[in-house]
Length: 184
Image (cartoon, rainbow, N blue to C red; front, side):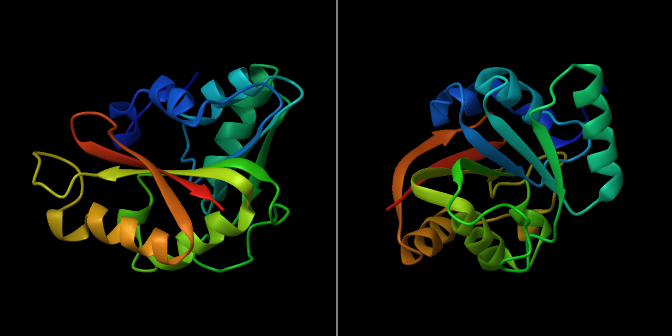
């Protein structure tokens, strides 16, 4: 397994699995999975060989790395998908097909946050859950500048305007907030 780097290493993948109540046979996408698959691999082990975990990223070398690790670990139900999440409809995953979608440490990197959230919602089936985790707005000795960070209050408002129901707010670690929404 490759060394985990970046902000994702500060978030326990088991917290994400538990918050989404991940079960065998589910279809889940980690949208903006990064090169380490920090959440992809624990999710894949939980959904098992009859489930599917989509590892989605805009950087092809990240997907090559995740695919290599998946093959080494015999996790053939991990599917890598190249996509620009800022473009609605660009992700080559069937509309309304996912049980869960994750946006973890992704939104702060874009000025097209609403478009990214819309793309995630498009992929969810009715009753599917969207889990978003990002940096708290407060200054820290590392991570993005506070100006780049997402306002949790604004994020909740945007998701509710997009007909998503707020299910839960949680601390995703010392430096991150988490929210879970349900698609009605």
